[in-house]
Length: 563
Image (cartoon, rainbow, N blue to C red; front, side, top):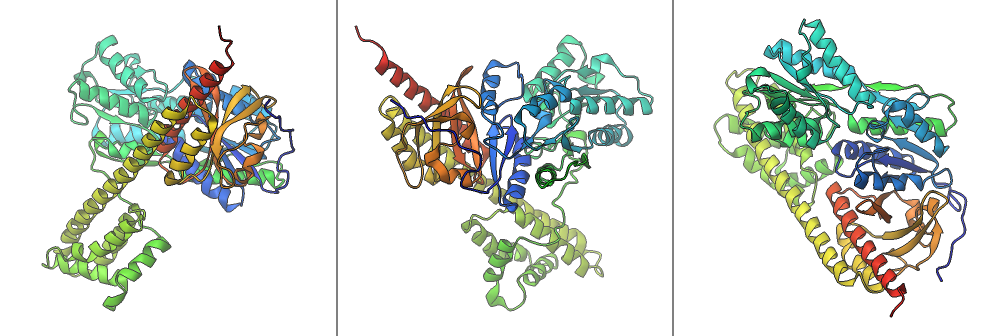
């Protein structure tokens, strides 16, 4: 018989605060970027972040909504405070119902996205779209501008649509209902919107100057469908979005958009949340500005080069000092002088001088994006030193541009290599689990011990959902931690999330992944939070879900009566 562990009060044996962050999807780079800001800010306050993935509330897709059970496991006994990305969580129910939905948790709560009676951090949706549409009209002369809306219940989507209408009216452009298209913030809905524009509304590419999408994912879907139809962007139709998600820069053409300060949203939401935790009775709603980012998809030359930093990361400076220590002058001076020598005729000198630093940074697995900031600093210093020679600035720009391309290629290769390595390791884990999932739990846990540490995870627990809700139960299926490579198959209160034997996990930030089989909830997997490509978590969710389903089928087969 499986032993049952009694319930305990939150934080028993530890004064550490636990903050839950509710998210809808691992593959949403907007949410992942906000989470990065939250993670840093929570760690600075010596608290633990519990990132709980689920789905949008009342998502009409049964397989997506099946994951929402993970939110139902939380209550005031398991967490001290909560952050909610209400714009994505509540996109199918609207802000009023979303506020009511959050009330059940009875803990201090901050919303990322405006909610009545809840401390909120918001972005300037109206101003962002207004600048974007005004740019299309004033700078490009576009008049026939289509708009792909977000979900009707989303306050953010509605604000962006109303701003679009207001700018048209200010410029005496009559709104055409055929140019207003429905969407739901997903890439497939952008594809469908473009199809409706041409197939249902019977318009041609000559009838449309530009398409504004209420977020980047829909804009990317629009571009995909236009390319499929042979309509070039931006030569025949310009396409723009909102958010500046990770994919906005990598697609071709790069996407003109409105940048949300996602990481700052995360940090500021934590600041407001801890003000509530520390006893402030009222925390006012705060509004953060957006930024218009011009790229190729509207017909502009990209203007979003890396900003000039106020200082460079300590790790980069330390490696740079070590790289150039034997050459006399300061390391940064050496690089500036090499850049100037190249522009004065010594071709390749800057690249040769920069190469040893790039090699050391690659070896240290450093973030090469920081080198782009360094190049911005070096460029500014070289331009300042070349004021009296009008022939040098253009050559400096060419040399720095060539260096940027080199760094981008190295960064891409390093990222691909890391991603391939993780995928290879997860595939090896999948094969190991597939061979063992219908046997006892010990070999399954052993497979996790064998493969997960190489992915940066020093623990993992997968628990089967016995009954739903915070008063329900979970049962340990398999997992491991530093002290025990084969945890006991105990049942414990669902609101605890983490089994008692995994006490170390309660003191660190973790990611909670709902495991499902189609529309069937299976259980949860809990992994330590790490600086990881979100793709690793997504793959592990599927692999661990399959293993749990296999384990459940094996146990059912063992219990079945035999003829």
